[in-house]
Structures are given as C-alpha cells and as structure tokens.
Image (cartoon, rainbow, N blue to C red; front, side, top):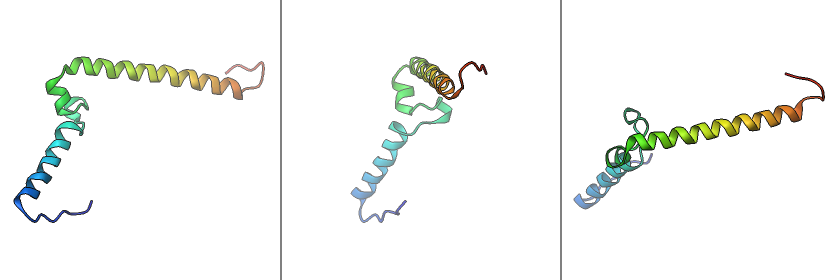
Length: 81
C-alpha cells in the first residue's frame, strides 16, 4: 500500500470518507458473521445468513456431484470404491 501524502483538509476528509466507506460497506466482519455492517444493521441478518447457508449447501451438492462424476470417469469398469 502506497502512503498518501495529504496536502489539505479536503483531501484528508476525502481519504477518511473512503476508509469509513470501505469499513462499513465492503469489509466483512467476523463479529457480524462475516456480513458487512451496512448489511447487518440495515437489513435482516438472519435472512442474509439463511441465503448464504442455502448457497453453501447448493455448492456442496454440486461439488459432490462433480467429484462423483470425476471418480466414475477415472475408474475401470466393474470396480467399486
């Protein structure tokens, strides 16, 4: 990260705004179950967590199916693992 040399008050305020914006809108916080503060406090965190869990479960199923296809493709006929 390149240090920023501040030359005036307006530039300092702009840089502070960017840091606060990142912290509240983009950075996921472990104490908020890896949600951003804006999502946690302005939306329904329980619903967001349910949606996340649903996506994770779908990804697990797809990964399991993909792994099974890869295993079947690499096995010789008649063998069972």
